Image (tube, helix red, strand yellow):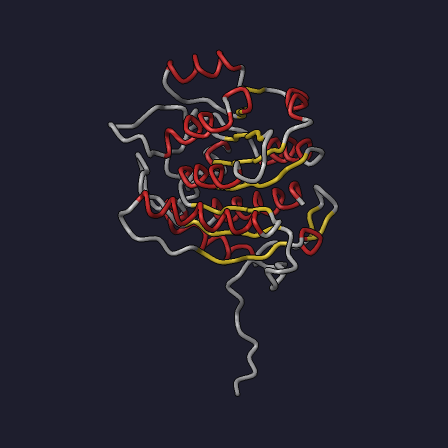
Length: 279
């Protein structure tokens, strides 16, 4: 019998037992509706490999990954070319996670994967709110006639939980109509204390990595100049750690557009700090 040791392809610091974990990391390698540069389907696998280049300790939170009690369930396998079935597969698995009394930590994939997560979570939580980090509004009703699009995901989520229960951070690109919708519901935030309106909410955090500036995150499907730096993002996370966070995801890394691997390394560190935030 071989004695190894063998390389681990799961996230470092995970709880190997699903049953005793409080958070379940779920890979969602889907990018079937990407409107510009595809490739985010390769992110979960590359992020896992890059995680082994991180320290397990976060000096930002003074916590260790072992303190987060998360289990890496691996990547879902999707029927290629079938958006509806892929989203249903995510929804079904996320429902199982919450039925078992746990939280989901989704790793995309494109941003549309957030929709079935919210559909599932809304069955188990009321008073639900979303904190949305992104460069783009994602509030379109459709894109090129297709309602199921990553550019419409927050619009769909707003139709489920109410737009008054959405706050958006880092937005700097979108149609005029989308910005008018943000103004109507006052969704766009600029300071961390503006989040305090959600102190009594059950909050889901969704992070599109293009919220970060292209200087540190070029490896994404729709890069947008003028974004925040890593420390600014962590500042928001630290404030959010005081709230009741019931789930999260990180999406839209397209690793092959940054041959240096820096974008993947940054994405991995974002995930580490967000794990600290929700645990």
